[in-house]
Length: 462
Image 1: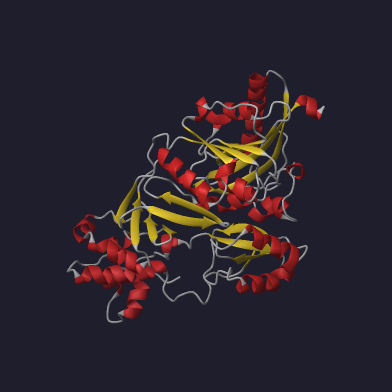
Image 2: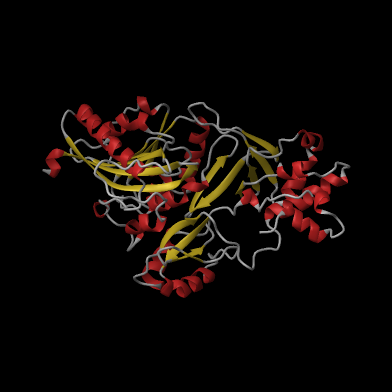
């Protein structure tokens, strides 16, 4: 992809690369932003394409990609894709097809994509505006432009590592109107570092606009929240789709870290859980959660428990417990064990950031060679999504592509949970690792994963 300097050189051929502020920046963040895609076999590609085009789901800005195992990934518009579309593709359009969602971390722009990337357009318009104010444009200023951002309707949330040079301060507030116009937004905010407080309040500054309330749609679910007070992770889309496909009809779920409803809502809206106890202690997130439950018509099936979940006055109620806190939810494990049904047990969905160590041999004792790379997401979730909602009992084997560090952490977590269950309930329980699900790469050599752990009293399993 052409950089900003090349775009400026095309538009202003009389200028040198030095005058244009040469740089190696390639679009937003040096890499294209990850996109959601639907994976299927090559023989079904044309049927999928026709269906996606007809329903205006096909992402025309990125190319179809052939994956290593021979399957094909068709980029789609993430906000438009619904669970019902996956069912129609799988059951009506191409019966017998794989049909699973995944994320393409290195999408290739299509030939029909605009000649200028958003980052190039931003560079061109900001540099012209800056020079019009009598400020010399430089490579330093170009390198200080945003390299990534999140779009929430008409609000654009910039990353924390941009507009740090002192020269920008003398150009405010008009600068923000120029940036917003270049990127097709009306409001602008800039991310800071997440506050180290227990509520993980985002340090976000509103640069342009009157308020930070936005609405985002994922898999047909509406989320409204204030970006200056609550976090929203686009990287969790595949996990939210997976959760939406779980067989939860008639079940009671406890979500120990509900936030604005990231997982509470998929469990209620798509997985059809009978009832959810949602725990959250960030007051701003609770306001958004209450609003989102009403927006999606499921408020009557959810009770919000505001405050520290360690003081939760619940026990013996849950068929499932979701522990969606990173880097670790370990502090919530005793509560999760307590709320599981004493006589029937249930399933824990435990989120964790796990470090990996490339180049080192860290295989568990007695293990054979294991692959040191991310598993293909469609391999991991094919069992859940193929042929509709699949029972957890069918997912009692780990993917061969899971990293040894994930397996070692999962076994340690299983052992710890078994001990806690014995302590909490006064009797022995049997635990079994059903599944390890990768969510995203959180940092270099740090993977956000989810462990599905089945926990049953011993009298149920013999």
